[in-house]
Length: 303
Image (tube, helix red, strand yellow):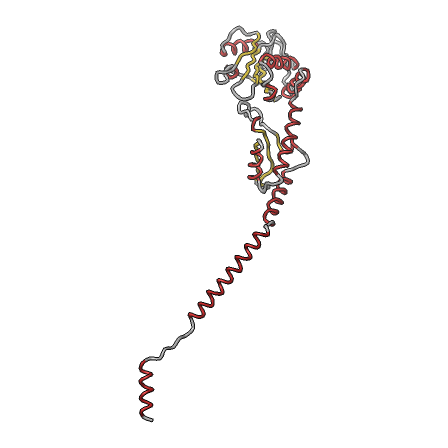
Protein backbone atom coordinates (compact mmCIF):
# COMPACT_ATOMS: atom_id res chain seq x y z
CA UNK A 1 0.00 0.00 0.00
CA UNK A 2 1.33 3.40 -0.91
CA UNK A 3 1.69 5.57 2.14
CA UNK A 4 3.22 8.78 3.36
CA UNK A 5 3.78 10.52 6.69
CA UNK A 6 5.49 13.79 7.50
CA UNK A 7 5.68 16.29 10.35
CA UNK A 8 4.93 19.95 9.69
CA UNK A 9 3.05 23.02 10.80
CA UNK A 10 -0.40 23.32 9.26
CA UNK A 11 -3.18 25.85 8.86
CA UNK A 12 -6.93 25.39 8.72
CA UNK A 13 -6.56 24.82 4.95
CA UNK A 14 -5.06 21.35 5.55
CA UNK A 15 -8.06 20.31 7.61
CA UNK A 16 -10.44 21.80 5.05
CA UNK A 17 -8.73 19.89 2.24
CA UNK A 18 -8.87 16.57 4.09
CA UNK A 19 -12.54 17.05 4.81
CA UNK A 20 -13.50 18.10 1.30
CA UNK A 21 -12.26 15.95 -1.63
CA UNK A 22 -14.53 17.76 -4.11
CA UNK A 23 -17.36 17.45 -1.64
CA UNK A 24 -17.14 13.65 -1.42
CA UNK A 25 -14.80 13.18 1.59
CA UNK A 26 -16.12 11.12 4.45
CA UNK A 27 -15.01 11.84 8.01
CA UNK A 28 -14.51 8.34 9.45
CA UNK A 29 -12.74 9.18 12.70
CA UNK A 30 -12.27 12.18 14.98
CA UNK A 31 -10.67 12.26 18.42
CA UNK A 32 -10.43 14.87 21.20
CA UNK A 33 -12.05 17.60 19.12
CA UNK A 34 -15.32 19.30 20.04
CA UNK A 35 -16.06 21.19 16.83
CA UNK A 36 -16.99 19.94 13.37
CA UNK A 37 -15.81 23.16 11.71
CA UNK A 38 -12.27 23.03 10.15
CA UNK A 39 -11.33 26.48 11.40
CA UNK A 40 -12.40 25.71 14.95
CA UNK A 41 -10.72 22.32 14.83
CA UNK A 42 -7.48 23.99 13.83
CA UNK A 43 -7.75 26.40 16.76
CA UNK A 44 -8.34 23.49 19.15
CA UNK A 45 -5.27 21.66 17.83
CA UNK A 46 -3.09 24.77 17.93
CA UNK A 47 -4.10 25.46 21.51
CA UNK A 48 -2.99 21.99 22.56
CA UNK A 49 0.21 22.19 20.46
CA UNK A 50 1.17 25.43 22.27
CA UNK A 51 1.44 23.42 25.47
CA UNK A 52 4.78 22.15 24.23
CA UNK A 53 6.90 25.01 22.86
CA UNK A 54 9.71 22.65 21.86
CA UNK A 55 7.65 21.08 19.10
CA UNK A 56 7.64 23.35 16.04
CA UNK A 57 6.27 20.94 13.43
CA UNK A 58 3.44 19.86 15.63
CA UNK A 59 1.20 18.12 13.05
CA UNK A 60 1.64 14.65 11.60
CA UNK A 61 -0.02 14.41 8.18
CA UNK A 62 -0.16 11.68 5.57
CA UNK A 63 -2.22 9.04 3.84
CA UNK A 64 -2.59 5.35 3.09
CA UNK A 65 -3.59 4.38 -0.45
CA UNK A 66 -4.29 0.65 -0.96
CA UNK A 67 -3.76 -1.09 -4.26
CA UNK A 68 -7.05 -0.76 -6.16
CA UNK A 69 -7.77 -4.49 -6.07
CA UNK A 70 -7.35 -4.42 -2.28
CA UNK A 71 -9.03 -1.07 -1.69
CA UNK A 72 -12.13 -2.24 -3.53
CA UNK A 73 -12.45 -5.12 -1.08
CA UNK A 74 -11.84 -3.08 2.08
CA UNK A 75 -14.79 -1.37 3.71
CA UNK A 76 -14.34 2.15 5.06
CA UNK A 77 -14.37 0.75 8.59
CA UNK A 78 -11.61 -1.76 7.77
CA UNK A 79 -9.46 0.91 6.10
CA UNK A 80 -9.97 3.16 9.12
CA UNK A 81 -8.88 0.42 11.53
CA UNK A 82 -5.84 -0.30 9.39
CA UNK A 83 -4.81 3.37 9.58
CA UNK A 84 -5.41 3.61 13.33
CA UNK A 85 -3.35 0.48 14.02
CA UNK A 86 -0.46 1.81 11.91
CA UNK A 87 -0.61 5.21 13.65
CA UNK A 88 -0.58 3.52 17.05
CA UNK A 89 2.66 1.73 16.15
CA UNK A 90 4.46 5.08 15.66
CA UNK A 91 3.28 6.63 18.93
CA UNK A 92 -0.28 7.91 18.47
CA UNK A 93 -2.42 7.40 21.58
CA UNK A 94 -5.98 8.03 22.67
CA UNK A 95 -4.82 11.37 24.08
CA UNK A 96 -3.79 12.74 20.67
CA UNK A 97 -6.14 14.90 18.63
CA UNK A 98 -6.74 13.58 15.12
CA UNK A 99 -9.04 13.51 12.11
CA UNK A 100 -9.24 10.77 9.47
CA UNK A 101 -11.03 11.25 6.14
CA UNK A 102 -11.56 8.79 3.31
CA UNK A 103 -11.32 10.15 -0.24
CA UNK A 104 -13.15 8.33 -3.02
CA UNK A 105 -13.31 10.89 -5.83
CA UNK A 106 -10.49 9.08 -7.65
CA UNK A 107 -10.45 5.46 -8.80
CA UNK A 108 -8.28 4.52 -5.81
CA UNK A 109 -9.86 4.92 -2.41
CA UNK A 110 -7.41 6.28 0.17
CA UNK A 111 -7.44 7.66 3.70
CA UNK A 112 -5.86 10.94 4.89
CA UNK A 113 -4.97 11.74 8.48
CA UNK A 114 -3.94 14.77 10.55
CA UNK A 115 -2.66 14.09 14.06
CA UNK A 116 -1.49 16.50 16.74
CA UNK A 117 1.91 15.19 17.88
CA UNK A 118 1.39 16.96 21.21
CA UNK A 119 -1.19 15.11 23.29
CA UNK A 120 -3.69 16.75 25.59
CA UNK A 121 -1.14 16.57 28.43
CA UNK A 122 1.44 18.53 26.45
CA UNK A 123 3.64 15.53 25.69
CA UNK A 124 5.10 14.90 22.22
CA UNK A 125 4.30 11.24 21.57
CA UNK A 126 5.53 10.97 17.94
CA UNK A 127 9.21 11.12 16.99
CA UNK A 128 9.92 13.04 13.79
CA UNK A 129 13.16 11.19 12.95
CA UNK A 130 12.62 8.85 9.95
CA UNK A 131 8.87 9.23 10.39
CA UNK A 132 8.11 8.33 6.77
CA UNK A 133 10.22 5.17 6.90
CA UNK A 134 8.84 4.15 10.28
CA UNK A 135 5.25 4.70 9.19
CA UNK A 136 5.84 2.59 6.08
CA UNK A 137 7.11 -0.26 8.25
CA UNK A 138 4.09 0.10 10.51
CA UNK A 139 1.67 -0.12 7.57
CA UNK A 140 3.39 -3.26 6.30
CA UNK A 141 3.22 -4.88 9.72
CA UNK A 142 -0.52 -4.20 9.95
CA UNK A 143 -1.07 -5.56 6.44
CA UNK A 144 0.67 -8.77 7.41
CA UNK A 145 -1.46 -9.02 10.55
CA UNK A 146 -4.57 -8.63 8.40
CA UNK A 147 -3.30 -11.07 5.72
CA UNK A 148 -3.14 -8.30 3.14
CA UNK A 149 -0.38 -7.96 0.57
CA UNK A 150 2.17 -5.33 1.54
CA UNK A 151 3.36 -2.57 -0.77
CA UNK A 152 6.67 -4.44 -1.18
CA UNK A 153 4.95 -7.69 -2.22
CA UNK A 154 2.68 -5.84 -4.64
CA UNK A 155 5.66 -3.90 -5.97
CA UNK A 156 7.58 -7.09 -6.75
CA UNK A 157 4.65 -8.46 -8.73
CA UNK A 158 4.25 -5.21 -10.68
CA UNK A 159 7.97 -5.00 -11.49
CA UNK A 160 7.97 -8.57 -12.76
CA UNK A 161 5.06 -7.86 -15.11
CA UNK A 162 6.64 -4.59 -16.26
CA UNK A 163 9.89 -6.37 -17.16
CA UNK A 164 8.02 -9.03 -19.13
CA UNK A 165 6.13 -6.33 -21.06
CA UNK A 166 9.30 -4.28 -21.67
CA UNK A 167 11.26 -7.29 -22.91
CA UNK A 168 8.43 -8.19 -25.27
CA UNK A 169 8.29 -4.68 -26.74
CA UNK A 170 12.08 -4.53 -27.13
CA UNK A 171 11.92 -7.44 -29.55
CA UNK A 172 10.25 -5.33 -32.24
CA UNK A 173 10.63 -1.63 -31.36
CA UNK A 174 13.21 0.30 -33.41
CA UNK A 175 13.21 3.57 -31.46
CA UNK A 176 11.90 5.07 -28.23
CA UNK A 177 8.74 6.38 -29.90
CA UNK A 178 7.80 2.87 -31.01
CA UNK A 179 8.76 1.47 -27.62
CA UNK A 180 6.55 4.00 -25.84
CA UNK A 181 3.62 3.28 -28.16
CA UNK A 182 3.99 -0.51 -27.88
CA UNK A 183 4.12 -0.32 -24.07
CA UNK A 184 1.06 1.91 -24.14
CA UNK A 185 -0.86 -0.83 -25.96
CA UNK A 186 0.02 -3.17 -23.09
CA UNK A 187 -1.28 -0.70 -20.50
CA UNK A 188 1.95 1.01 -19.45
CA UNK A 189 3.16 4.60 -19.61
CA UNK A 190 6.86 5.29 -20.20
CA UNK A 191 8.34 8.60 -19.08
CA UNK A 192 11.83 9.28 -20.43
CA UNK A 193 14.48 11.42 -18.74
CA UNK A 194 17.26 13.17 -20.68
CA UNK A 195 20.48 15.09 -20.22
CA UNK A 196 22.74 17.02 -22.59
CA UNK A 197 25.62 14.53 -22.59
CA UNK A 198 23.94 11.22 -23.44
CA UNK A 199 20.44 12.24 -24.49
CA UNK A 200 17.94 9.77 -23.05
CA UNK A 201 19.39 8.72 -19.72
CA UNK A 202 16.58 6.84 -18.00
CA UNK A 203 12.92 5.87 -17.90
CA UNK A 204 10.06 5.41 -15.47
CA UNK A 205 7.27 2.90 -16.11
CA UNK A 206 3.81 2.93 -14.55
CA UNK A 207 0.58 1.08 -15.20
CA UNK A 208 -2.14 3.41 -16.41
CA UNK A 209 -4.55 1.90 -13.90
CA UNK A 210 -2.16 2.86 -11.07
CA UNK A 211 -2.12 6.56 -11.95
CA UNK A 212 -3.70 8.53 -9.13
CA UNK A 213 -3.68 12.26 -9.83
CA UNK A 214 -4.86 12.89 -6.29
CA UNK A 215 -1.48 11.84 -4.90
CA UNK A 216 0.73 12.63 -7.91
CA UNK A 217 2.34 15.57 -6.13
CA UNK A 218 3.20 13.49 -3.08
CA UNK A 219 4.98 10.62 -4.79
CA UNK A 220 5.95 9.63 -8.32
CA UNK A 221 3.94 6.62 -9.48
CA UNK A 222 5.62 3.61 -11.06
CA UNK A 223 9.24 2.53 -11.00
CA UNK A 224 12.52 3.59 -12.56
CA UNK A 225 14.22 1.08 -14.85
CA UNK A 226 16.94 0.60 -12.22
CA UNK A 227 14.23 -0.30 -9.68
CA UNK A 228 12.61 -2.83 -12.00
CA UNK A 229 15.79 -4.75 -12.85
CA UNK A 230 19.56 -4.52 -12.46
CA UNK A 231 20.13 -6.68 -15.56
CA UNK A 232 18.88 -4.14 -18.08
CA UNK A 233 20.26 -0.61 -18.23
CA UNK A 234 19.23 2.29 -20.46
CA UNK A 235 22.34 1.69 -22.61
CA UNK A 236 21.16 -1.88 -23.19
CA UNK A 237 17.74 -0.58 -24.23
CA UNK A 238 19.36 1.81 -26.73
CA UNK A 239 21.50 -0.99 -28.14
CA UNK A 240 18.54 -3.32 -28.66
CA UNK A 241 16.55 -0.57 -30.37
CA UNK A 242 19.51 0.15 -32.67
CA UNK A 243 19.96 -3.53 -33.50
CA UNK A 244 16.27 -3.80 -34.41
CA UNK A 245 16.58 -0.74 -36.65
CA UNK A 246 19.66 -2.08 -38.46
CA UNK A 247 18.07 -5.48 -38.86
CA UNK A 248 14.96 -3.97 -40.43
CA UNK A 249 17.03 -1.87 -42.84
CA UNK A 250 19.24 -4.78 -43.95
CA UNK A 251 16.37 -7.17 -44.53
CA UNK A 252 14.78 -6.71 -47.97
CA UNK A 253 12.47 -9.47 -49.31
CA UNK A 254 13.55 -11.28 -52.53
CA UNK A 255 10.37 -10.13 -54.25
CA UNK A 256 11.40 -6.52 -53.69
CA UNK A 257 14.91 -7.19 -55.03
CA UNK A 258 13.55 -8.82 -58.22
CA UNK A 259 11.04 -6.00 -58.66
CA UNK A 260 13.77 -3.37 -58.35
CA UNK A 261 15.95 -5.33 -60.81
CA UNK A 262 13.12 -5.49 -63.37
CA UNK A 263 12.45 -1.80 -62.94
CA UNK A 264 16.12 -0.99 -63.47
CA UNK A 265 16.21 -3.12 -66.67
CA UNK A 266 13.07 -1.43 -67.95
CA UNK A 267 14.55 1.95 -67.21
CA UNK A 268 17.80 1.04 -69.01
CA UNK A 269 15.90 -0.24 -72.07
CA UNK A 270 13.79 2.88 -72.32
CA UNK A 271 16.91 4.99 -71.92
CA UNK A 272 18.62 3.26 -74.83
CA UNK A 273 15.59 3.73 -77.07
CA UNK A 274 15.50 7.43 -76.28
CA UNK A 275 19.25 7.72 -76.96
CA UNK A 276 18.94 5.96 -80.35
CA UNK A 277 16.04 8.18 -81.34
CA UNK A 278 18.00 11.28 -80.44
CA UNK A 279 20.96 10.16 -82.55
CA UNK A 280 18.68 9.48 -85.50
CA UNK A 281 17.07 12.89 -85.21
CA UNK A 282 20.42 14.67 -85.07
CA UNK A 283 21.78 13.06 -88.31
CA UNK A 284 22.45 15.72 -91.04
CA UNK A 285 20.09 15.65 -94.08
CA UNK A 286 20.58 17.14 -97.66
CA UNK A 287 17.93 17.91 -100.26
CA UNK A 288 18.96 19.21 -103.74
CA UNK A 289 17.48 22.54 -104.82
CA UNK A 290 15.75 23.23 -108.19
CA UNK A 291 18.72 25.45 -109.23
CA UNK A 292 21.07 22.47 -109.13
CA UNK A 293 18.88 20.50 -111.57
CA UNK A 294 18.75 23.47 -114.00
CA UNK A 295 22.55 23.76 -113.96
CA UNK A 296 22.93 20.10 -114.84
CA UNK A 297 20.64 20.47 -117.91
CA UNK A 298 22.62 23.45 -119.23
CA UNK A 299 25.87 21.49 -119.04
CA UNK A 300 24.39 18.71 -121.12
CA UNK A 301 23.47 21.20 -123.91
CA UNK A 302 27.03 22.52 -124.27
CA UNK A 303 28.56 19.08 -124.70
